[in-house]
Each structure stands twice: as structure tokens, then as C-alpha cells.
Length: 389
Image (cartoon, rainbow, N blue to C red; front, top):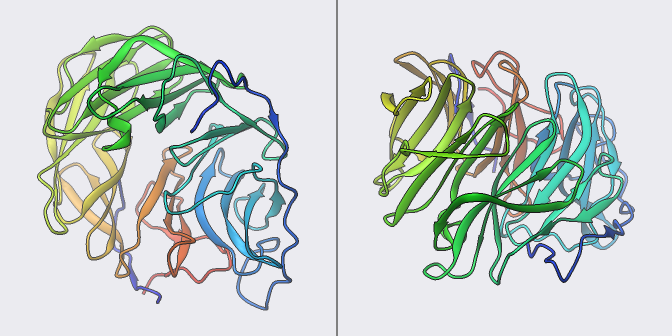
């Protein structure tokens, strides 16, 4: 069933390889023999009955979408890419791996405002793969010094460095750490001293990491147990500081720069509601309160596109995107069909993307903003995602 979307004014919000199982080239599954598309409204190259699970853009023009499509075997895993901002698409390969969609996979693309490196990362928390040729071939990523129960959490990238929050062990006896490595080298190692006790990724996601050039911020923790925070000004060595959120709050990081870090603290979830407080640190100082997001909806993702301009996605009885400009909040996207958002990201201050729904749901789509989150519209991916009313 297609929900109605209302657009208002402004918008927002592995089993990885171990040392004994070194990284190696993984034979990608050959592109599936897909059925011919029916005459429906979709961009050229989009497979018939394509349902997107995760999407990532590295530039305004270059993007990737992972999902399933109709094939002779029923439905097959498919990766497609665009070089013209979604006007047309072509098929790439997927790892030779049965991608299950009960735990939504996350696709990441390394890039910037104008450069696409062809570096992709794909995980569903239990495994992590990388491609360095735009999805033509895939490799398993190795992580040093991991035990059992490995879970991969949020990831972030600069043009040269790769960061991932990784938990291993059990909730009580494990650990949550920041792993780092060079983009293009599929070996990650723990960042010295950046860790908390317990496998927080297995329960709460482990918190968040964000990178911007050589500046990195990371928050680790477990709800009601611990919360810790570090920053780096060179992309490799980290200094601990007071965290933006308490142990009773989940931390999302929205931006990092030489002079500013934005964070969102979400807490006291109820039926379709959750408190969401913004915090800001300037010039390396302690975090200070910086307003609140409307409490309707449970927090999904958060991005700060400019000082005091934020995008937050949330879900309650509907799928919601909030955006503010200072103290004024608007709801530019409100979809009555309450399917999950994920993958909220911006390639610059104006162009952002978010995935909605997926193969396990009736509907799916990728929405794009070209005006900093003030308005959103779906890409033509064949599945009739909700459009503005």
C-alpha cells in the first residue's frame, strides 16, 4: 500500500575475516538474468520490480542502489549504479553472498562533492565486504584482534581513511571499539584506546562515528551502561573528551570540523515518541544545549548540513523527516505508511539522499533533496514510492 507523503517547507535530519582468514578477492556473483521490465515509470536500466534496500551516492552524479529484482529464480540480489544522478542506471555485481534482508544491509560509497573513487563497502552487521572498482569485484574485509560475536556498526570515511564501529564478544563480556584503515586496503585495526566495555553494537548500534577530511569524532557506548567520546584532528590519533550525551541517551553525530561538532541525544522512547536534544561543541569546548527536535517519532538518522540547520529522520505511525533553520522546525516529508528510513547522507550541503522501505516491505524508494532538505522527491527506480500530495 502506498502511503501519502506531505511536503512542507524545510526538511530534515561480519563475520569479518580474522587474522587466520585473510582478506582475499571474492568472486562476485554474475549479474542475474533479470526479466524484461514492464512498461512502468522508471529510469532506463532499472530492473523489473526492483526494490531498493540501501542506496549510497558518492557525488551528485554517481550513486549506487542495492536491492532485489524479478529473475528466473524468483527474486535476485542486484546492485545498480548511475553516473547521471539517477536518469539512467546499469547493473553491477554483488558479493557471492546470500544477502538477507531481515537485518537491513548498509551500502557506503566513498567520495565527495565531485570525485567518485569507486570504493564501496557493504555490511549487514554480521559481515563486511569492499569493492574498489565501483561494484565490479568484491573483497572480504579483515579485522585484526576480533573474537566471537563480531558485529559491524556505523561507518564513516574521509577520502583516504575508513572508520567502523565494531563490537565483539557478549553484551557483558565483550567490547565496542573504533576500527580504522586506509581506503583501498581491506585490513582494519583498532584505534588505540578508543573502546568501551560490552558489545554495544549487538544491542544499541554502539553509537556513531563521523569524518570530515582529517577531522573525526566518535561516540561509543551501551544504553544505561556507559557513554564515551573522542576526537581526532589528524585522522589517526584520538583524544578523549566529555561525551555529548549521558549514559541514558543514544548518541548520533551530525557534523565535525576544525571548530564545531554537532550531536543529537535521543532518550525516553515511548509509543511513537522520543525526546531528542541537540548539543554543540565549538573550538574543542564542552558540549552545550542547542535546542530540541520535535518528539514525534523514534530517531533513525541525523545530519547537520550547516550551523543550526539539521536533518533528522524518525519513524512512529508514519515515516518523518524533520528540518530546522534555527529554532523553527518543519516537516518536509511525512509518509503515512510507516516504513523504516535508513542511509541518510549528504554529498554536499544541498544534495542529500535517504532510503525508505525495502525488499521485506511492500514498498521502497530513494528520496533526494537538492536544496539542503527543504524539499524531497523520489528517484525513478521502478517501484512506485510515495510522491508529494
